[in-house]
Amino acid sequence: MKIGIDKIGFATSDLYLDMADLAYARHEDPNKYLIGIGQSKMAVIRPTQDVVTMAAAAAKKIISQADKEKISYVIFATESGIDNSKGAAIYLADLLGLLPRIRTIELKQACYGATAALQLAKGYIALNPETEVLVIGADNARYGINTPGEPTQGGGAIAMIISSKPKILELEHETAAYAEDIMDFWRPLGHSKALVDGKYSAGVYLDFLKNVWDEQLQKTGYQPQDYGALLFHLPYTKMGLKGLRQILQNASIEDSSRLLREFEYARQFNREVGNLYTGSLYLSFLSLIVNSPNIKSGERIGFFSYGSGAQAEFFSGILQTDYQKGLAGVDYQAILNKRQAVSVAEYEELFENHVFDVENIELDYQEDKSNFILAGVQDYRRKYLSR
Ligand code: COA
Image 1 (cartoon, rainbow, N blue to C red):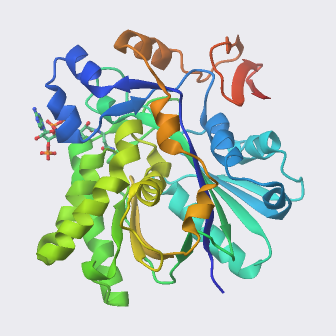
Image 2 (cartoon, rainbow, N blue to C red; image 1 turned 45 degrees about the vertical axis):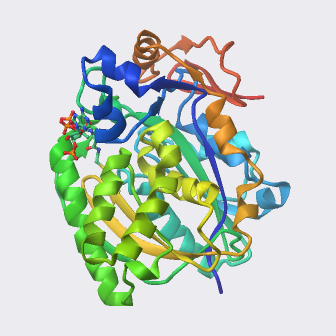
């Protein structure tokens, strides 16, 4: 039996900040952000948007009535949780109108969360092949104004339907995982912004990559030539490029140039959206299958998932014949092109107005045209609107 990704959807803010504008405001050379970090634009999240509304928007793009009847489990991965107790998946299931006879859960392990969700879903579908699992990776990446991490912010949501009839990707059995207790990035309780030791984190990312790549190689024998593309968690796109170069150290010139070429397609959307935290690896997958004219069904795609703290996993899947159908006809480049640019001052104001630990607020959502809105908070209860 095949198990894998049947459909994939993505949603982000309708606002963005140009990285060159941010660079000028921070007295940096724009090429540091555009080339050195590898980011062109950064999603700016309105106060009326959060992980629940973005997840609902991503899921709405792909969920049919038939899916609604088959989904029996919603796994919501995020490190931007909106409650310390109640899971975001409950709010999401309600906004989407899913049936009540389902399981819903929120899970967390930094940017690895969505991969944990995917692997849990794979096991669940093996036991329940007639059903479907809705997996979400949604985040609002916040480091703070004028911090080194600022140019690596962003936000959005990925939604994936996992089933035993995957149109997009069949997950392969062998995976290599590695965990070690380290402090490279964390967000203590009560903090709305992450704390990060950025340079240390980049080093650990590469060490963990070496570890899981070597183990997967031992288990499967797969070399770079056995992959149609290699994908990476992309906190900023230069990080993935460093990872790919590390893997390609002993590869042939032909394989190197082919995999580097595919990486450019795979980072195209991430470059325009910024960090999605747990959804980043899967946005890169979406970017590859939407933008690459070379990638073919039957090819093996390798995935490196990394979540600070730290947990890593390398796994792979085989691209399926109908993979284009799993995109549900959505034109993501057109959606990204339609976004509205904001100035640095506007971004800073929106950033500071982020709704966090607020007892009561009524939000002005007139300018937010999204289908799903955070309308306010009453007695610490979040009020969502669907329209
Ligand atoms: N033109 C081209 N490249 C330039 C440049 C210019 N004018 N100026 C600087 N650069 C390059 C640097 O050489 C460096 O490249 P390298 O990493 O390949 O050496 C890169 O731009 C970044 O410069 P650096 O001085 O290291 O930036 P920084 O001290 O501001 O920190 C991060 C950059 C990424 C470490 C920081 O943004 C951060 O901490 N982000 C958080 C990301 C994170 O850790 N997430 C969790 C991990 S998964």
